[in-house]
Image (cartoon, rainbow, N blue to C red):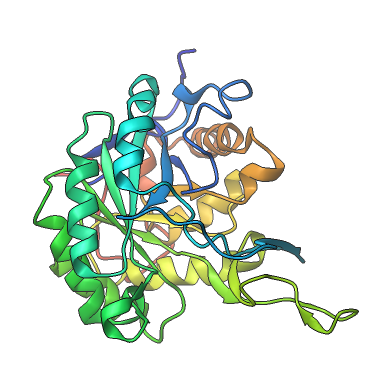
Amino acid sequence: MVETGPDISTALGALKLSAPTLMGSGCYGSGEEYAPFVDLARIGGVVLKSVTRLPRLGNDTPRLVPVASGLLNAIGLQNPGIESYLAHDVAKFADRPCAVVGSVAGFSVDDFAFVTERLAARDEIDAIEINISCPNVAHEGETFACDPALAAAATRAARAVTKKPLIVKLSPNVTDIAEIARRVEDAGADALAVINTVRGMSIDVDRAAPKLGNVTGGLSGAAIRPIAVLAVWEVARAVRIPILGQGGIETARDALEFILAGASAVSIGTGNFTDPRAPIAVADGIRAYLSARKIATLREIVGAANPGFLGYKPHSA
């Protein structure tokens, strides 16, 4: 299907996207699971589930708890480990008609370098997301994303082993997300994914016990959208690299909030679970918004509602 009307293509560094819609890590599989319902050629790309150096079984169950306007998850980075992933999974990504972004998680700086180098070497992978919301076992469990120096160190390690676009996913569970964004930009990130989930928990009042097996988890969904929009707004005033806005996006108007705040593209996660066609509706809605206002390209509205926006525009000189 050939799309007409305004140009909604965008870019995250050297990663070119035909539409500004990426699917969040762990929320869209590898794309093939949704192919019967969605034409993958009409979305920007898929961010794959995070992979680690060694296999992980994940957290105790229950791992998912629906809550008001959102979802708590504590999956625990369950994955087969990078060696098995390369041997059995990556080859099937070659036929995807959209961008494929590999996601890397680690528990030491060396982990980020090791897994990024192995995964980015594959032709099927167009870019790498660095999930720095993992505890650093060498620093008494402190999360990389919550410390500017650790966030920069993980980014620098990944940057040193690949020239492919590097997207670093930031956590909202910090005092000053803008400072961490600046440090990550200086360390070599090509783009920033803003934000990851917000820490939360839910208690079963009948059992007088936490509902999640891990006790706490990450809150996603519509409930965190105002938090995420604010984070994009703040980061867009602090860095010049492009931003991938994410957190509670379900509709085109939701996505437009992020774009007007300074995001060059958006990522849809939990919304896919209730509506597999949400990515198409979001892309079509963005195009309709631009058309109604006689705006020719998406890049013209990136940061348009943010007076302090530093000025990154996709495809601009």
